[in-house]
Length: 367
Image (tube, rainbow, N blue to C red; front, side, top):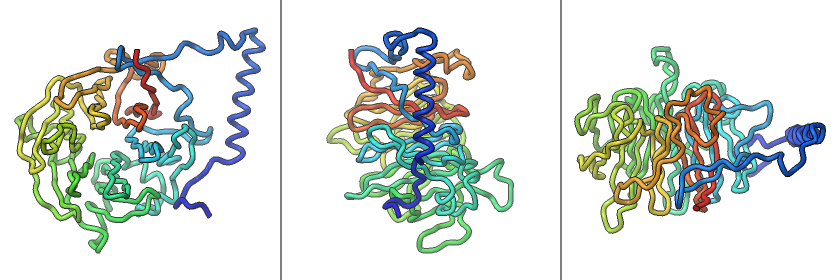
């Protein structure tokens, strides 16, 4: 028995398939008379100067019988393992170790652990994933959309659940069958993201539904709600992402909200009092901070990097104007960045809202 809850580790057949594919590719090069010198294209880079990144073409590959769906989210843990989730039933979750090896996949048993009958239900509701370090322990917070139009009975999705790093559910809030010591009924309509403050307070945005931003304490006791549809400050049009920004030294952390369809970021105090607005975004989706910078994936075909004072430092891979079906011909461009994360060494991982997920790794290679 593995020490992990329900990994599906790569089989010998998977490795043989990979080796066979590599051998076939090498044979093709020999047959065409091409040597090693011209077999590999020039590296793909994004950005410029200090903010130059180089694409790692080899990262994120799955065995032949598996595939990504629409790209939902990815997070990196303290071991620099990358957890990738997409709207796929095989796998629902893929985990890569720090060296880029696919070490685990979660599907059927994960679906059962979170209360579903089959992986297809996970794929139909998958959306947000947030990693929280609480004391010395790491946890995952998963945000579910509603399956379909939400009118089916019983309704599937519309939950937020907290798990350990092996996927064991510790608490669920939202569309639950009944309340218990580890579950709570709450009227989320279509939640999209979660963030956790240093004191344990939990913030949830209902971005595909009510346009409300909720604050709970560490035990999921409801504290406050703001928002609703609109474009005035304090109102939202797809409040898609939420983050607790701790970059401003000697100042209280702030709550950042990706107000996607209003093309802006709204900033609030921890008590959810409005503070300011950051304009000039193209459908921002969520956030991640690393080494003094805030990273923002924008569904409008780019990734932005901000400093602690909200100044734009770089904008990467602007693929605006390129058709989604043509984007694979442009490895230096993004189509629809939906989420990202950054490893301890600065490696940038981005996943996109396209049917094949397109999770990719970019290494910092400052010029």
